[in-house]
Amino acid sequence: MALKPLSVFINGRFLTQPVTGVQRFALEILDSLDNYLSEHPGLSQEYKFTCFVPPRSRKDTLPDWKNILIKQSGISNGNIWEQIELPYLARKGLLLSLCNIGPLLHFHQIVIFHDASVFAVPEAYTLAFKIKYRISMWILARTARKVITVSQFSRKELAKYLKIGIDDISLISEGCEHILKSIPDYSTIGKNNLGKKPFILTIGSSSPHKNVKRVIQAIAQFHGDEINLVIAGGKYSKVFKQVEGPEKEHVVRLGFVTDSELRALYEKAFCFIFPSLYEGFGLPPLEAMACGCPVLSSNKASLPEIYRDAVLYFDPTSEEGIYRTIKEFMEQTALHDDYQKRGLLLAEGYTWKSAAESLLEIIRADDPYSP
Image 1 (cartoon, rainbow, N blue to C red):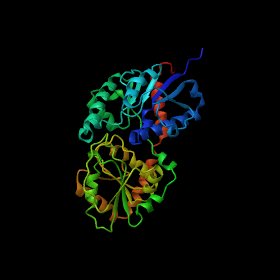
Image 2: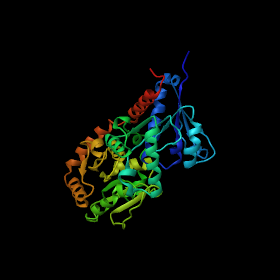
Image 3: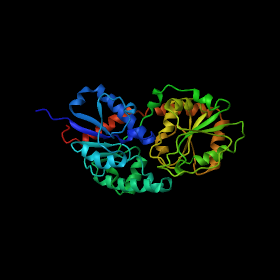
Image 4: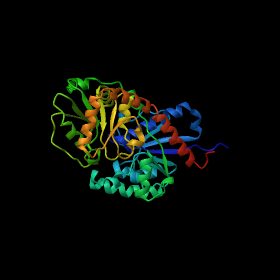
């Protein structure tokens, strides 16, 4: 007698949220999982994937997956939908929560924690967000069937702050090839007057742990005709505390940009700088590398683990150190080509296909009927 396929339900609340790092992870790994299922049709006999989303989700913004069914279900939205309705909707199967949080009342669940930042850098978050995530992560770490994270650094951090065994946390990586699927929109260069002199690109909110303020201060030490700093990304004030400094002459804030605009910025930037003090993985530098943009990076947290020798490192706590690193990179022209080549080579090793295969292996290991 053939066994019934394992029902895997996906917490699709992220599809109603702005796309930041964790939402990007969820979208790309599920896109690749959907493609993998197309390449291996026999898996449909083993697994049935359904992504539940709140009822008010805009249908025109939902992914067009072929093997993962999307169901708009329930009557509420937000936290109430996730914590009250989703456990009931997913009661007959394994639930997969990809974005740091899931329903506390569903005990057959795999949850992905991307980092331990709400514990390690509490000053970066609003009080309500910090309390919610600390409590939720502590409970889920003890009730979920499996906890996953995205770097060895985060694995150690989560084990330390959540008081769980490091061997109880599985590991999968991330990918960066998604940025190459977007056609570059070079109009963003002209409309923001970015073609007149070289510019350094960075991405991040005004949150303290993103540390953009120190880069702004470092850039201010250059002469007006030397270089600009271009900052892309939203503020996300419901999540992060903001650290706003006075605007500088050499700083161009773009706010939210599309993937097509972002690819164009990566391709046209002199380099990409990532000054973060705390990251569980740090995806933007890999996107930059995939587009041929050399990277200057903080030497903190997971970043040396992920980027290895493919970036030029600096101490992100030193404004003077950031300035000297930028100056060295500008003056030693051979560094540009060297780190461009290193970055392209490193980026090839990080794919969403590999991440999706790892995720499926973890799901299979949790299936009591799998061989």
